[in-house]
Length: 402
Image 1 (tube, helix red, strand yellow):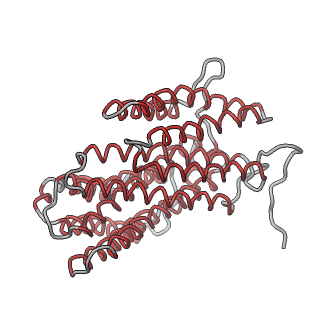
Image 2 (spheres, one colour; image 1 turned 135 degrees about the horizontal axis):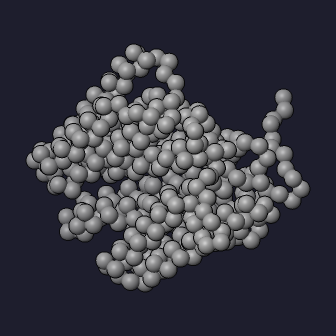
Image 3 (cartoon, helix red, strand yellow; image 1 turned 90 degrees about the vertical axis):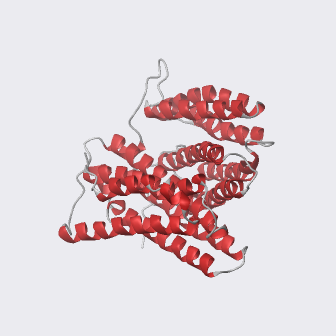
């Protein structure tokens, strides 16, 4: 039995033909993502659970600022392996170097707004600006060289607020890093425009939809494991009680519901929807954003479960109820966006669930954390039931992307 291995031009690292499924080196990179996602959850949990720590809203904002550049690192790495063959030693070396960079992220994340800001910001600059510069210099294909040169020009600009922010303290650092994230997001949305080099909104989703859909699904599956891992670790660190056992069960059921809401059924049809779209590149970009929003929702949900497991029957601060309920709400926002990508519509239960979760934040601050997480699980269960009923009425619904 022969394997379908891509052919190569002499001296070229570019793939020939469509990208295949992820290789072992890419899965190795994903293992590093497990570490840093768990560190993000642990950091947010420790700071929110500390009675005399930073403001809860400050903690959430800082956690978001750390999450977004991490996702940009993962996206750039995935786009590299979609364009270049990860079986080649040079590409494998780049991915392994990225694993080390993510490791530095992980050990710096807890002090990114304290004593290790330079390590965090410097690592990000090296990984983003350094990799794009190297590819722009070494690539032989003109279109690839131009694309990565555009990226490098923007990352050179973005590096300035990252570095200055790392040397400042307090709100100035947060503001400068937020500016860097905002500029990068706008540049990405506009196609990284550079004078004389133009802009390019078309991307690899147009030619590697199945590969990229699988990679985003793999990252989402990794994030689904984080709530189970973190709440399980927290459960082993506190005395067992009926409240905490119930909290563990609710956390498990909530994770199962999030998993089911994704894969039933739009999550299984992302690649088909992108390929069937009139503008595959644009549709794929939106699908990628939808996955990242869902991952943010899962990570936020994981922080909420840890808080519930630690203090299931005590008072619920407003920031805690916000985290516990906002996690599933954020996930539903991403899932609604994905549904629009696949079917060009959003079923009513999803926005209704988002409104219900947000509306419950303030009232449920008056009840114990376990009751708040139980309410979130009930909302997700009702949406899952509505999805099941719809699929029974439309068993063979096919993708109809906008």
